[in-house]
Amino acid sequence: MKKYIPIIILALACLTSCFKESQLQGYLGTNIYLQGSDTLIVPIGQQVSTQKAWLDNSTKPVKFEITNIRDKFGERKEEFFKTAPLTVWNVPYDHLTDTTRALIEEKLGKAIVSPIMINEVNGQLYTMPSTADCGLTAGDIFNVDVRMSNSKGSIDIPDYAVIAFATGSSNDQFFIEDFVNGICVEYFDETENQVVNIFPFYDQINNSDPNFETRRANVVADNGKESGMIFHKISDTPETGVTVWYKILDKNGKLYDPSKYANYTTTLSYFDVGIDRVNDPEKGMGVSFPMTPWPVLDQHYYMRGEYNSDLSNLDTDALRTYYLSHSDKASASWSPTIFDSTHFRGWYVRLRTRIRIYEPGTYELIITVPFTTTK
Image (cartoon, rainbow, N blue to C red; front, side, top):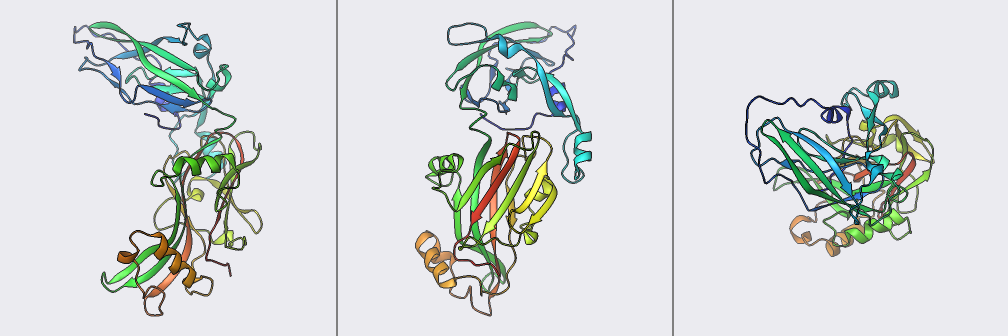
């Protein structure tokens, strides 16, 4: 049920009243409910949205409104109904054209929103960053009552949603769904009669990893237990927006030349959705963005380091041993010709992530790639 998204002004426009009562009688269903799981888990201070409502064939247009939000004692939580300004997108973000700070800021505006809102048209619920100002603690649970109206009349829906708040803004500065550190080798496969890729080293922290929650918690805690993949906040500046420094290190901790960080095939990299790229020989590659959450586009991002056309900086023996001992599909996918002069084409280190930043400041992402040395 959870989905972390940027709330754009076009979506918020649906929350302003455009409902007009029809003269037709129509039909008003009696089994209207919010689709998805029974309870929405919301980190305090983060933007979260639900699925849409099931309308039970009710005649459209419909209008949803929140009538009450109750705590465990049944008391109304007035803080959820107080409004505050929020930076929003007046026009949707486009990474192909919004390539400067000035162009991005032209699309931004302010909307007056409450901490918990409902889309009047489809019944989707939203929580806003201002839940951080509502005096909440982790474990607080609230029941949301709504009313839906159409040309037939209106129906009150008690317990339309249950919202459980989790540890919030101070500890959940970012959200990690995927973090992969790998080595890609290109070689000519005679069976397929084409150049193919293989990942002899592939370390992933995502839901494909049985230890996903533990490993992700180690990264978030920055406790040193995931030294090969690090993501942490290093500064509270800038006060609005974010700056992120990316470092790809070899097995000895030496920085790969950040000026050679590039796209992996046709996929998006962070420098495609960030601005003001800087290549620093000590700090790595830096990109910025003037607002959060960032990246605006919530998806996977890929990046590779320098392309190497020879094997002088790759420990092929150790890499082969590692791969054959770690991959369940090793016997099917590994070829003894991968590193010979006839079939080998090149190699590079590759990063894949899906990390969303919710709190302004400066962050650092570091991967250390074993079996490799920089030139």
